[in-house]
Amino acid sequence: MPIDPRPRRRSLLATGAAGAAALLLTGCSQERPTAAERRLSSADERLRRAAARGSAALLARYDRTLAAHPDLAGRLEPLRADVARHVRAFGGTESGGPGSPRASGSPGGSPSPKAARGTGAGVPADPGRALGALANAERAAAGALTRALDGAPPELARLLASVAAAGAVHVYLLTDGE
Image (tube, rainbow, N blue to C red; front, top):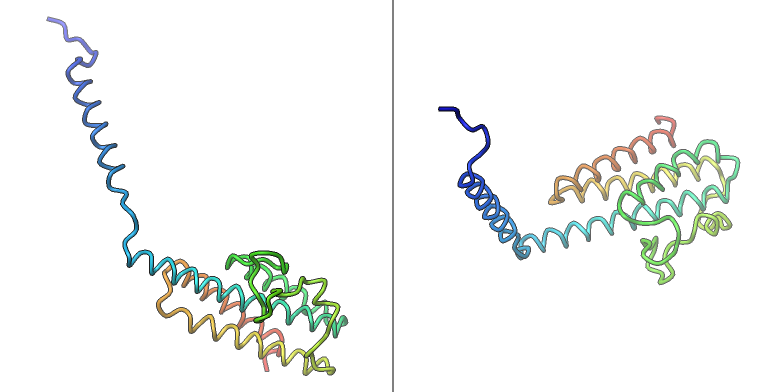
């Protein structure tokens, strides 16, 4: 008696029913987030916003230093570009538009890079001291990110640690390894 290679109707129906049941169970298992999950998500968002604000403040400081000392552009522009990427990595924007992190408590947010370059307010007149002040700002920002690691979710902790490490490298480059 020859064996029919085609699947039987009963086995097809059983497989289809099992697949449909699996899909229904999977769809039903997607419940609303628990209170603990909502707290973690909220804490994650607060950490990201704080890191974006800190990076935006540092970016504004680079812009003010560049405005006061355009001769340092060759040295500062690559570091400034890194800080701008950090702002974006934390979900902020470089401009002072809606949704951007605020560099200070002012309601208008951080100034745009072009606007900030127009003012050298708060920047030492001596280029060496200006670099030192920028290095201190980088050091403080890296320290804040390092402190934020405690309790950060793993993905965000990796980002915080990477940006803090980049800040430490910036300090080294700004101080010539002193």
